[in-house]
View 1 (cartoon, rainbow, N blue to C red):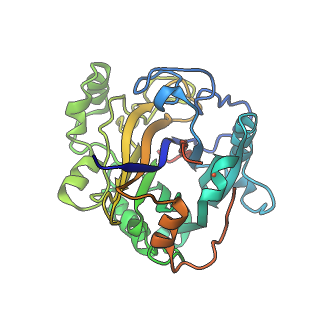
View 2: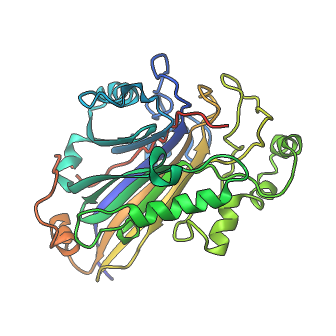
Length: 366
């Protein structure tokens, strides 16, 4: 029998939320970060969706439309980052990195034990608003060598409105073309072994169904029929954008646009699945090493009514396995990042962990 050595076995919990410039001051985050008990994986319960409902080992939190009142204060984290850090601190998570571009924010938290296994950490940002001059739209990212593999998390906020599909496609390609890193072998987003791309992608429904008819289909849970009209699905099929990424089809109601503070749709806009989480794995790029990221759940969080978007989360079982040989993650890092030079940051990490991605957006655009 073939011997398989498990180098890493992680549960990644990703969360995306457009917060519509709201302050986190009175917002309880325990349920959103899966800190308040257990639930059934894949359902709308309060659990993490990770095996055994264990807490994630790593949280990657992306936000859009964060209030920019703090943007000029370079010595202090955004209030959302501070709020999240406060919620996670008692569970012994520490902040690894953060990057903000006006209202677009990404941050990562991890358990102490995982930090030594994170190397070559970099952040990047790409502006796409006003033809690349303004950062109200665009993307921020965190990339690293994680247990020896190249992984990147991209949080983006693309052009709004039903009729701006062409602009959304242009935003995507601008991010792919202009996002550049220093790590040898991983200069671009899609050079990475693992890619997680999430945020308020702003894709709407094609065709001319009225908002009222869309709402009727949503009330009757005819999600599959509506998703046949989803711009992101149609784009990926045609190869125009996001075609290198995979997405499990949403089995939850559209996450935009709601009346703030309620679960009623604001029918000034047609309901749409604006908030999405996609991923890509290059499974067999290294001899004798198999990479995988099996998706465990994908759901919305309707109890969080702060903005006109609902948060969306996903969990993944991230695994790195070596067949018929024994690799350490340091040896895998040397294979994958061998010419990358001195790690730009080396925080302090073990073999089983999980991620939470949270995407939040302020700058509410109707």
